[in-house]
Structure formats: structure tokens, C-alpha cells
Amino acid sequence: MENKSGIKRIAVLTSGGDAPGMNAAIRAIVRSGIDAGLEVYGIDDGYKGLIEGKFHLMDRMSVSETINRGGTILGSARCKEFKNLEVQQKAVEKFRELGVDALVTIGGDGTYQGALKLTRLGVNCIGVPATIDNDIASTEYSIGFHTAVNTAVDAIDKIRDTSNSHRRCSVVEVMGRYCGDIAYAAALATGADYVITADIGFNMEQIIKIVKKCQKQNRRHILIIVTEHITDTSDLARQVEIHTGYESRATVLGHMQRGGTPVWYDRNLASRLGTKAVECLLNGEGGKCVGIFNNEIKVFPIEEALKMKKNIFEGYPELTEKLS
Image (cartoon, rainbow, N blue to C red; front, side, top):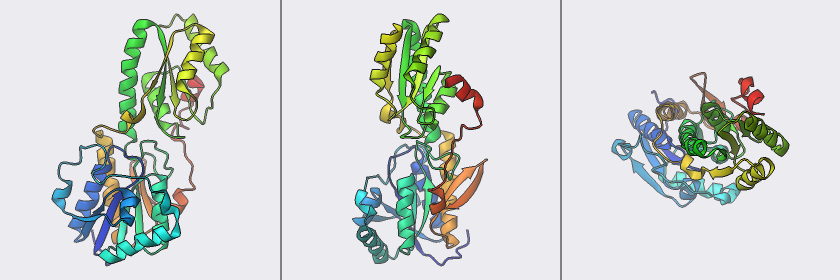
């Protein structure tokens, strides 16, 4: 990659919730940067580490044997104070002290907002989407989403085995914050009877109706998938049992969906997006983020990306017809 910008040093950080594939993105950024003749610094613990000056020079061996590791080797931490201008200016001072010219930020929308603020203060930043929630609209898929769905599907399959043995209704809560993509994808893959997301909404009457319909079909197992923050999953299972007499159990999959070895898709996506991020910086771009649509890498202004809305399951009418 040709260096048209004249930059010599770049840095990379991960912020927000960890996602499988973050390490593959770090690896791609470090090695692409070094191959382009740049010095690449890692920043520990996200924006918190940035304002504390936790920079360290990385080489090719720094990211050796990391492409298959979950989590993030750079660590992550919440940093609410980064919303304050004086804290942002302190971060810019840290860049100037080290002579770092640009930054790649890996994370979700909060990470993007931080990158946009730094760009406006003179530090060119490129955002790389990494969140299991898949709630970044400027990309069809974010790093970590496919692995999280695989984890959820594997767990639900196991729950189905035991529930089928005991003739139960399983209410399974998946992650996703306020985005229903994990729930939709897992519901399709496991043949769920009902899915509850912010888009579809919570309708107890409809849920009871579906469970009773399954009872009439003499079903041994009923599966309901719900996105977190919609309702109390344990209470929902109790209400189903009270109103239908069908033995019900609730399972919250929780943070297990964040962990584990990233699947091939997340490793490849992370590698492609990380390389593209470095290319953008070499072209002198800032305030941008990278994403993928129809297997093609795209670049968007972060400000525009934060305003975009999406639902990757809009093209699946049979899903909402069956599950709503």
C-alpha cells in the first residue's frame, strides 16, 4: 500500500464490549501498517488507556498466534468521561507526545463516537465495526456477530435435547442489546416457534396463543427466543406455565456469547476490514469507518454511519410471518 499521507506512526485500540475476531483485526492492522513502513502502537484498555498513555510499540510477533483467539489482547474498558472535551484534548496531547499521526478504533457505536470526536480535534481516525450485537448500520455484518450466533445456536440445540425429553417450553434469552439480529438469526437456525425483539414487541397474549397452538399439535418441545432488555425471561417462563400448564424453563445465555474462538467468517472479515482501515489512513482519510455489503468492503463517514438504520432480516418475510 502506498503512503500518500506522509504519516509515520499509527495506533490501534479496542473499546466497548469485546467480540470474537477483534484480535484478527488488530493483527491485520499491525501487520499491514508495518508492511507499509509505519510504526504501529497498541493502546491498552481502550479510550481509558489512551488518556492514561498506555501506548506500546508493536511488531509482527506481537500479534503472532492471535488470529484464533477470542477477546482482545489490547483489553477494553468503559470510559464515560471521554465525552468531555477536556478529556478528549488530553488524549490528543498523548498522541502529540508520541508523534502518533492517526488511530484505528475497533468497536461499536460508542467507539465510533469517540473516533469522530478525535478526528474533529485533528487526529485522523478510522472505525472498524466489532460488536456481537451487529447494530452498526454501516456494515451488513460486524466482527463477532457470526461467532455469537453460532454459540447461541449450539447452546439452544443442547437445551432442545433436554427440553424435548421432558416435554417443556424453553424461553431462551440471547444478547444483542436493543438489536434483534442475534435473536432473528438464532431463531431461523433453530426453528424457533416464537421470537421476541424490540422490532416485533412483547405481546403476552400472542405468546400464550402460540404455546397453546403447539400444545394442540402434541409438541414435545416449544422454543421461544427473546432479545435481552425486552422482558424478565424467568417471569415470562412462569407466566407461560401458569396460563398454559406447559412446564417452562428460562435460560439466559449471557456473556458466553462474547467468548470463544472466532469462526472463519469473523477472522476473514476482521482481516479484510483491518487492512482496509490502514489503507484509508495511508490515503489521508479520517472520520471514516469501514464495513461490508454483498462481500464488498465499503467506506462511510462515521457521522453518516451513526445516523443510519438497518435490519438485515427485512428480506425474510417468512421469518416475521412465522414468528410474530
